[in-house]
Length: 184
Image 1 (cartoon, rainbow, N blue to C red):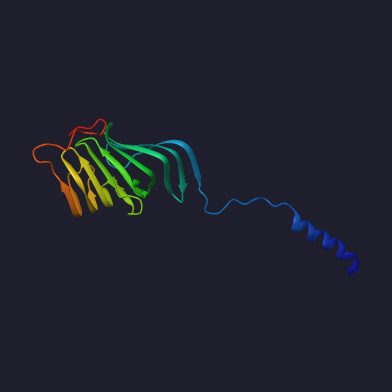
Image 2: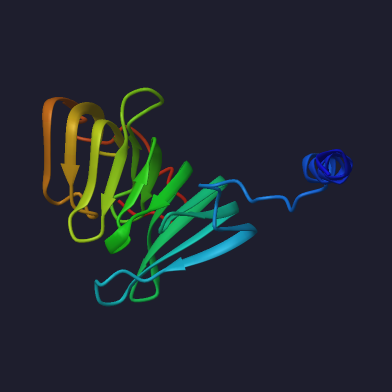
């Protein structure tokens, strides 16, 4: 009797081993991927909105990563306040932003900031506080220089930094405003 059961059992085993199985999605993969995006962010601050364009946006575990040709702007009461350029931006809970490094152009005052640089640490943009960066280079018609552990509000009215090295022109400016739409 066992001899009669062996061939069907062997056939069943072969079928189970070589039968096609449904493919499984990779674990931990992105939940949503959008390409060619325009992304609006409305933080809690009254009248403030961020507008971004990028090649793609990926949702990863509740965070949104915007990357590839990223350009963004912060608008206050409908008027452009500053521009942000970065290789990518992560939108965290509370709408705070994180980037490996960034270039920011602040229109009022004609400021251009390089916030961090490759390998120097992340930049944080906190909606209620402003910029935090391990290193900054600032250029404006009336100021230029760099510092470590930079912290500032969005208007650069309250700045803190370690080891600042800034130059101020004697009785003039370093040159005209180079920020498009900016005013000194």
